[in-house]
Image (cartoon, rainbow, N blue to C red; front, side):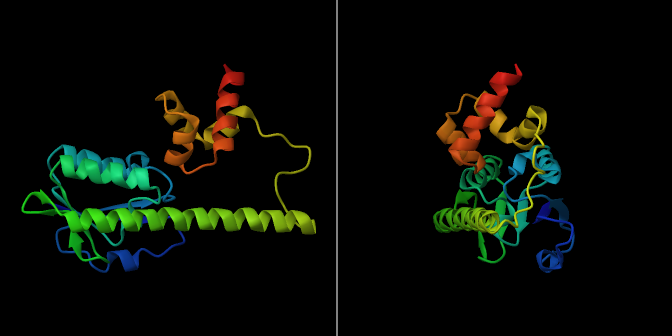
Length: 199
């Protein structure tokens, strides 16, 4: 059976463009979640994975590779899972499939690696612009951050970085965790310190 995976970052975004190529009989899985959230941790990403493991899905379509994620490691991990389960992935805007007659499409592998790298760089550019914007706002005295004097609890802080915690618990280094979770090394160090202080 064929499936289509759709992802938008917010409920305000229109999914019509991603639905345009939907084929008759395709089972649709739609997530409203940030592209930085690992595919396996998304509500409907999990459902799609289970459907594949149960043998119900053998072909998945996405409008573009960044629907699977904006982190190169996560995208490649998801693609490896599809390959292990002999699931064909079709990327609409590239017009190519991951497998040809059951064998890995080398052209697909090369193009996807490049596209995933671009998606990751785009996300880093967006985050850098956000940081620059905050710095400018602070310089002008117009930054509206957390209220002065208020403190974020350790629990609230750690809740925001659940993926970082998981990665550290798996034994990954601070540098590897920063790359896997698309956060700074400083953030990972803060999370590690917060875990230690909350024990």
